[in-house]
Image (cartoon, rainbow, N blue to C red; front, side):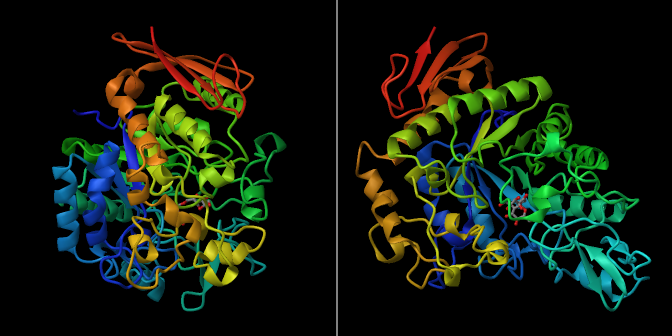
Length: 507
Ligand code: TEU
């Protein structure tokens, strides 16, 4: 089916923490292949694998030093070929995670670029002179702390980095850079991938005139932009990201993918203009098919009212868009901890997510109801967490290893895992929940199965969304089928529904 992605359920794998087969305490590609039957047993359509490319691992793979290589920690190209072959045998599409906005400072392109002001790749990254007073070229900030500019003594210029200083931003205004990235994407399509999760798709271009970001207008300020301790979240991003040129590049990218039938889910990180971008990026054919949205990845709870508000805003601002929803991923506190959910509540949210219009990304361990790991400062690996500790604890608590069975380290590794396996996770292992008919794991299988039982859940319209107290209701329909969905998102009986009951009625 050509538009398999529409309404697809995608399972995100964080390779470092999925399954180790070598005993070094770090997951690998062979481990993913070994555990694919578990993923297939959920009934999902596809996997998205977080980066496994050659990397110095300063940002755990989101800092790529060779886009065409497999990092030795994760295995070899043969391992990757086996992984794809096995996934396809099991009927799973494979999306890989391309981090094109920036590379590692160890990438040969950057080594060359920084060597002089007149080499062949001098302009492949964003180099700029200081302001006359010697300060950085603009007031732009890095998400991971400090200015977005790093001084380079050899070139006697600053370079731009939206994330770590060791993640220099590529200069997309240079056509050669775009061409090199398109070639690279073709390389992976040739190896059989079905598409890409594109990291930070709205960060590709910066304002070529290097204008300062203005102060953030109060009406654009989002109370839930986390973490508040990060100054980045208090600045407007008018000029450092979400530039109009992004669209032309995404159209080039889409045109290159089209003959191969490959799809894109793009990550838009923009708390000021997220919904407008959702429409611009996915509401117009020939750009990206799906966009990963952040609305359910933050906040202290997810009330029926908030869900209604998100859809009302989306209907108003992004009526033609195609969102990809997620409640958890490798960057945020796991949702059962963020929203303090019981297993019953986790079940209800899983069902509601599956019933809503859009594609869905599940994050490894979500199907087990794993809570956020409570780590000590000494355990931290994430540079973002180390920078802002203790106000913000970083992203390690959601990156601890999968738990498979009752053996050592939950069956993840025979060596010392790179992040600890919390004791509290062990009773929630796949083996334990497989054996328990009423487990959350079996619930996820049934909930995902609803998209096969009721095709309108994949691509039908979504109308009549409303909330009466804690009860969320909406309708999904296409020309074959019409469903009324009601969900009680509370601990007490309401609207004729038991606590956390979700009701699906075929009209
Ligand atoms: O994340 C982009 C992004 O916006 C995140 O920085 C997010 O705001 C933050 O992690 C919230 O906790 C992507 C990847 O998902 C992330 O893992 C990478 O570190 C980042 O890009 C840089 O490549």
